[in-house]
Length: 157
Image (tube, rainbow, N blue to C red; front, side, top):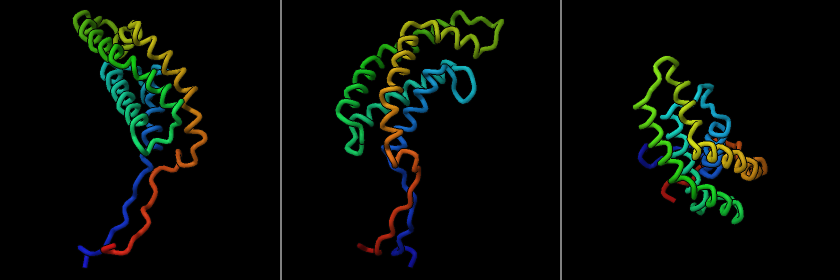
């Protein structure tokens, strides 16, 4: 009976995957590159949003393995997110109105994004955060584990 048979599925350690995603986005922000390409307004917005969502989960989730001091560091970092988000939105509108079509769109995007004082502060703070929060990932045996199989259980239990 298929309906009564449990099919083992693969689950992923939510803390490890969230921290991994957060650190990947942080590296992209700190280095100014995304998937080998120069940042665009869209990527800047997406990466900032992903970092904010992951950061909030890392602070608030009962599954989080960050220490209280690491959570405090992350809270302090996230406090600047509304200003960064607003700067990206405003900068994008201004850049669209004065787009320089003589160079490639990505180069124009990167010049405009990197000229935002909030973005420069964001990249510096992100680089500092990487050094402070990289340790939990390196010391967490589960961080690189990725998906793990669920232990089979008796049907109906």
